[in-house]
Image (cartoon, rainbow, N blue to C red):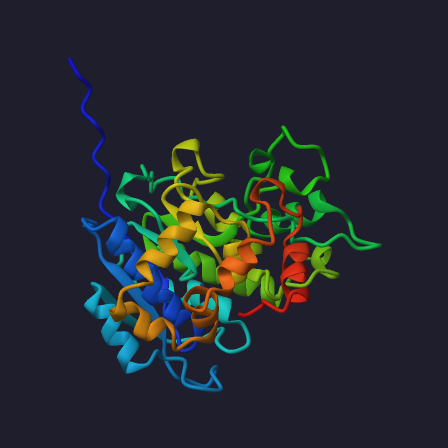
Length: 333
């Protein structure tokens, strides 16, 4: 008898929409989702920080962009920046989880993500949360008198009474950054955004306001969310993403971050998709309002950046890529 194919559990998608670059990224995210995952059955929820004492300026998207996103099938969900805001905008992805439907599985994506395929083809196991491994060894930073990777990471797990040893990748050498569970917060998922968000917030505030002694030399800005995320995921029984999630940061999604980096290092397929979904006038009229999209996509600067690099022989560090682009005068944010 043929085995029945597992049915994907319904889930919602969360992104954060905000005035400035993020609102234009949100338009491109939604346009690429509708192009490549047209039958997505879940809700796409754009969580939006609201004005308040933690913001110097109104962080809300423009009415016009909000209407574009709704026209692409998104919902707008406001939230208050109680603990973060202007001083740490990465906190939006923490506090914004409170605006998501309680008890419904969710996948969070940074807005600077391009959808390349069917997101419902990814076999998420929401009982085992995970996050993006598309990262470099950015934290902790090696210092002259620092206690080392093991001491720093163990102090964090100990702070929250979490078991530490099982999080180690024993195929990696001791005191090498990849031995320790560390994620890019560009995507993560879980079974319940309310529970996940509450714990994310609890851990983030505890580390920010009362860090372990081992972290005394370490910067938490902008790394706080990525420092805490492994602890949250581990506390819910999750860990590093399983091989069946390889479509994320692969054939199904592309976390491009900044357009010069995107054109320098991503695949031909991703670049072609970016330019395809950005081409229709109903999308182009909005994206061209933001200088980076105008220059890189519509004025062809992105292709000039692309010609500067061999994707099969890229510089090993992102900083080297940035510096080469800046030296050529092609850097935009």
